[in-house]
Structures are given as structure tokens and as C-alpha cells.
Length: 269
Image 1 (spheres, helix red, strand yellow):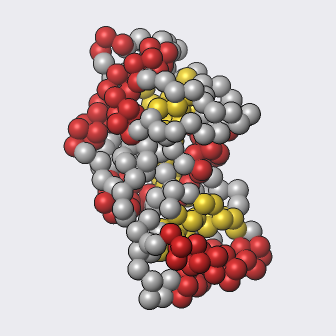
Image 2 (cartoon, rainbow, N blue to C red; image 1 turned 135 degrees about the horizontal axis):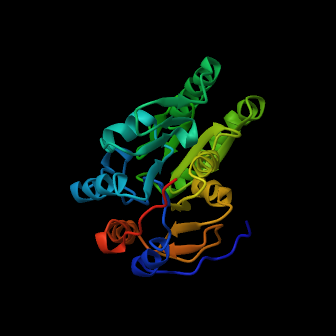
């Protein structure tokens, strides 16, 4: 998909387009999309009204809802203790279906050991430095530096990248810069694969993916049709179709999508 600068839209305009579809597959990132980016991941928690809206959508006729995140699946389950949702964790490596069945594509003990080794190096690079957080997700690693001094953060990241370059190359890993975070994950594991899986499973539904960060570009590019919605206050190159300015606008869109007067009955077989 070509990289352009998706035009800004509004929740009301998007709802008018999306609710015209008899069936809708709604896929959402978590951090920066459903909830605002917080100083630390632990502080990015959903408001009760967001949980209530997601729960209503999950059982709304003609709607399939999935949350696709880089967070671990058990974290998502704790943050979103709702029935009827697809929860996809670790960039697509873990999928929990609405019925409770869990699929994991990564069962590699060596990968877990590699992440422990990378975590040790990260902590050594960050020793005696404040404002950093290392998050070992088992199949990936995240280095958060939102609270760190920008100049110091760059030095720490440069040191970490230099010290781990041979491991990243030999173990077929990749580095992904995000919003004040650097992630290390296996090549070939990304949100786009989860999107492709759900699109195949619900082939009659109109697919929509909403996300804000670099890792969401894989999801946008996996859409062969439908809508990719970038969440960003500023225009920037993306494979998305249109842009909303904030998680607040995403919430307004969700409210519109579960209004009774917008409902179009799904086709029956």
C-alpha cells in the first residue's frame, strides 16, 4: 500500500461510512489508540465508560471487535476483562478468541532466553540512569524512555544497539522505534499477520484497523480493502486511509458504532 499522508476525518463522518456495511470487523490497537499514551505502561488504563462501550460493541449484531497490541496477552486480559472480544497480544504471537481458546505461534524456549540476555544488556546500559523502563514480554522486549532526559536516552539506546547488533542479526530479530520506546521482536511476527487472519475468518465483513504507531503500519498494509485509521494529531506519512486526531475521537467513533439507529442487520446464511 502506498505511503501518503492520510487526510483528517471526524468520528461522525467515519461512522456514516462504516455503519453502511452489513457486517463490520473492527480491529484496534490499545496504547495511543484506545487509551492515551501514559508515562509508564502501567498507568495506561481504560476508563469505565470505554470498557462499557467495548462490551456493548462486542455483542452488537453485525460487529466483530478485536484489540491487537504489543502488550502480552495476560496484560490485555487484565486491562480488558470483557466477554466477546478477540484479544491479540505480543504483536500477533498470542490470540485469544471470544470463546476463550488461546493460540500461540511462539513456543521457543531459546527465544525467551534470548530476551533475558537482551534484558540484562539493557539494564547494564541503563545502570544508574533514571527515567528508563525495561519490559520483557517473553517473545519481545521493550525499552521505554519517556521519562528519561532526551540526550541521555539517545546515548543509552546507541549503546544498547551497538552491544546487541550481533545478537539481533544472528537470532533474526528486528528493532522497532516507537513513541519513546524501542522494541525488539522476532522478524515475521507483526500485527499485520493477525489482521490478515481475522480478515480471512470474517471475509464478508468490512475490515477496519485503528492504530497510532510504527507497529500499526504492518496492520494498515495488511488490509486489502476497508479502512485503515491513523490516530495522530499531526499529518504524517502512513499506509492508513484517513486520520483521527486522538484516542478521544476514537472513543466517539466507538459510541457512534453501537448506536441502535445506525444498525444495519447482518446478512444471514
